[in-house]
Image (cartoon, rainbow, N blue to C red; front, side, top):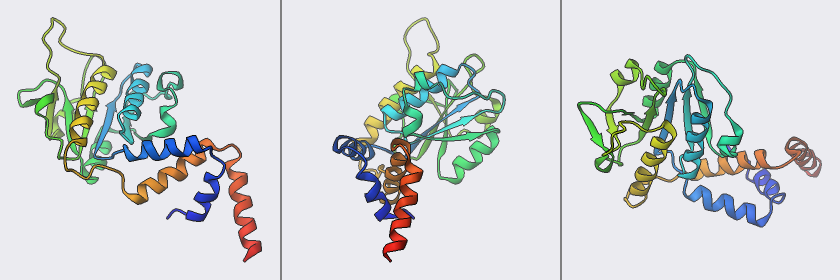
Length: 222
């Protein structure tokens, strides 16, 4: 539960421009879609995917590090790691189990005999778009548990795209189509309040000291 008095106090430390920016961005945020990367070993690819998630309003990113474990490249992510929520898993099985428990269908972004082209994708279902390793692609585990298979139409000699490029194309199309629908895709009021508090924490210097003084002053005044 978010302490509304504390939140209002913290927001007095932000500029009007920053507050307006928070409000505007949060109106476009969604958890209807999420993204998962599986053991991507080029650090800049994972970072770039995270950046695309921020750009297109995806609030949560899931990273499976069963084989490869690296820090997010801040230069590539361009601060996106501050604004999106990162869930890390050491097992793809645990990641899939958790996502399905949250109501997501697993969408494998790979050519498949039962695949769906991007333009025909059904945006009404909560979906997690899975992206695999640069050369090997998605693991057999993801393919086995996938509820849907999605591909980007291509007409050239090249048969694949860079992971971060694929993610950007899919997210741009899916979120644009989603926002034209009647689906309730936005964050809940509780989720918005939680993000406002979280972003204050990540923005305000001496956050902990300010919070401590706030509660000390409140206890004195009571």
